[in-house]
Image 1: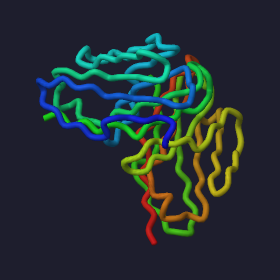
Image 2: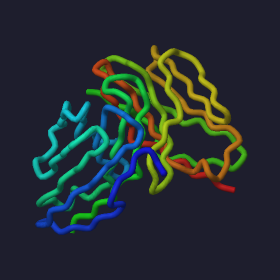
Image 3: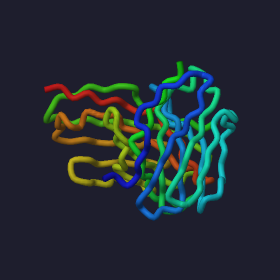
Length: 114
Length: 109
């Protein structure tokens, strides 16, 4: 079992649907992240949480809404998405925020918006 | 602006050596990371350099020159399982990670 688990692995949704991506980390880390990965583009940081408090929102459209109920779980709620939002959404965690420790990634949720 | 440049794709032969370059321009520097990502899988940490020089870890080595804004990842004795994307990332003065677009490495028998 990996340290960071994401569900679902694949999701297809229409532009009017509402869905959620879930991330769970079993590493006892204090910081969690949502990244968007599109083909041939750098990873885009979307949201950062440290000790369940959001500390970063990189100008992400409001159709993406994060939730961090505790230090082990992170959600990304999706509604009225656009086709250009189709991408791989990666969750990651690190021991602390702002340090030089490595990130531990989940395997991602592949999202297709029709 | 901040940017990381690395080749989009490289091809190498099984058993050979390949060097993947990464150049960066960032606001400050708090270290450079290399990650490996197999298709459909999570990126996994390979190396971290914060001082100039070469760090060796088995078949993989990573080099850093801060004055040149340059790093490379060296893979020796290539195996088919090394076919993956290799992501370069720099931590800037605000401890934000700036990512390259990744280099897809194709290993041929």
